[in-house]
Length: 457
Image 1 (tube, rainbow, N blue to C red):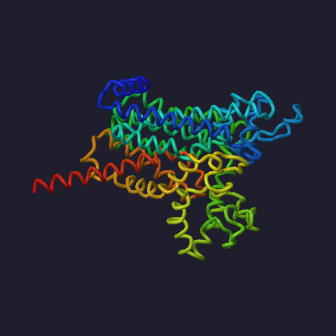
Image 2: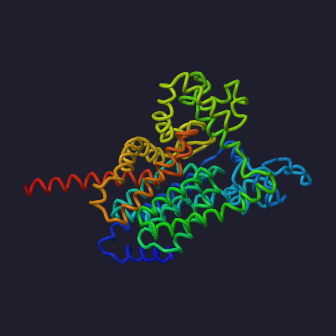
Image 3: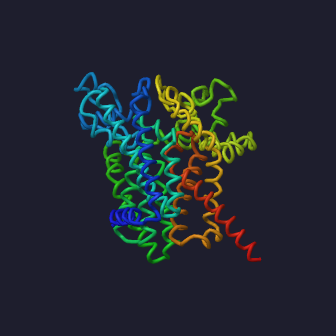
């Protein structure tokens, strides 16, 4: 099973004298990551933490645990006997996680316990990420990718919100690590774990729900029609098993597979070039609030798609530029558009990124490296599909790199269709950094190969 491979990797790292330096640096990196996360959590003060999405998630958890009803209505807080109306606007993954802690009405104790657990998950992400990165990078390059992940202000600040970013990031790293383990030694047991993990992650963020199909296709290409198809079927069946209770519940309770509200909003909110309505500066980030036809446009999926088609016909160059060029740019941008600014999703009254010099230094370091990382990552995502990479790396490493590339390309393409808010790219930061480091190492390897060839010639 995967867990035994994890233990084997750990022993290999500890038992190798050559890797002792990497082991020491990894330990220091994890300590730094833990300290930054711990202090940020302790000193960050979010203004009205239970707002918007966070309020919905909390109420789903509260009503599920105390009223046995999956609903985001808040009336039950003041009237326990209130008859709630069940809904399915948001998937239940994160509310189920929160329900472990929500043993009463909102309080600083409950919120504190949730955020502390998220901080622990964020630190564990660093450890699991190392074993994933080590499957296609040398020890030192793997540690450097973990180092960038440890310093990432986006990942650190995300722990202070009752939002899906931290949990989803952790699950994504687990999924890719499991896929890396499968690539080394395929088995039905590992395929089961991957399917189950992708099902759980899709319940946290439904945006992942089509990725298992891509994984299935890659498995067939990697392992042939017979073995690959067997693994793919196992993955897809286990994925469906996790999702089926949610779908059945919706059919019984609501008479539909899902609520299309978020899907319609996702497409609708992404149709305004540069996130502005008619180029109005005041509408930046929330253009749909300024559009007087928003209610009409979002009647259903067909109506919003029809509106987008009409806009393409009236201004094709503007909308082609927005959908093909500007959306990927915004998706991978640094600043959280709909938040307080910079890396903050909801406004904060206090943060060590203002009060502590070393937090400011790490912030600036990551800020100035950001677009270099994005460009290197983009280049690497394309290079891993070329024969040249296949000649320089073991087949297993190439397979894992292609899984990472597929994940990054999948989310980029998905948000080219819908709203490319940078917040949605936050859980992908570990993969961004690892692919950027891979590209840098590949360039170094190519230069060294060229120099050796030149000397021989």
